[in-house]
Image 1 (cartoon, rainbow, N blue to C red):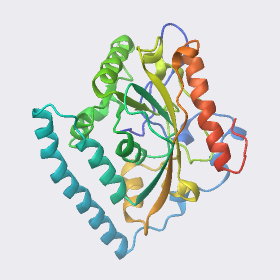
Image 2 (cartoon, one colour):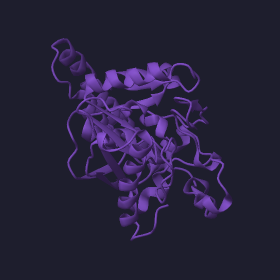
Image 3 (cartoon, helix red, strand yellow):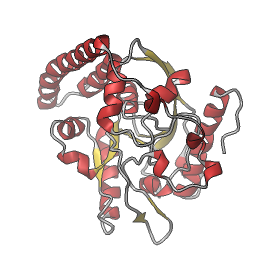
Image 4 (tube, helix red, strand yellow):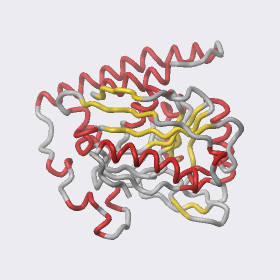
Length: 301
């Protein structure tokens, strides 16, 4: 899970500073006006007129579907855990949640099943059930989410790695936690932009989030992921001053479904690159190329 907050800064190895976890609203990023394309047009949530009676009915039905999936998956999760079997139930639960929210996912490419670090662009909280429902990976989240009622518990079931945005002296410990998670769950997904966008741009990747790959653990590959919501991106994205409950309410009450293309791009060996900055740049280059193609060749800077 991600939380829409303004994160602190972390310093890694005396080099650059950057957000180490969490999600911030993109309007809060201090960029020159000409570099803030989301300010040039109204955001969807600003013109949304609210849900009608049918929206309330859709909300109830979708929530009941997710509760039913939870009731089925959680007991089976613990049974599989006791038997020490490979546990598919967190992935199936997330997949059920994405479907209940209206996501109709078309997968392109093949996800690596183990020993992989997934790197993805980020539009909304719904990215997590969409991606997790298909690759079964754990995620990285800021540590405050661990104490959220119910949500924190669900994150722990899915082997979420919680990192602190306040513990400036604990980065080495957090890197070790990520390495342990990779060894245990075989895969981790991160959103290195550190925030959500409206799907028409790609923000700079924060290299400190890839510190676990410097040096890379033995056998680990990096696989970029491109999430393409198409024409629905502006409506689904969680940006600006909209809070999390309001965004969830909009998505869960909206009519119909929405299509998502989940592109698992060509993986690469992080050992072929000199440090996390080059790894971050290569992952971003591949996602930017896919985003540009989806926008009809629009340059992504």
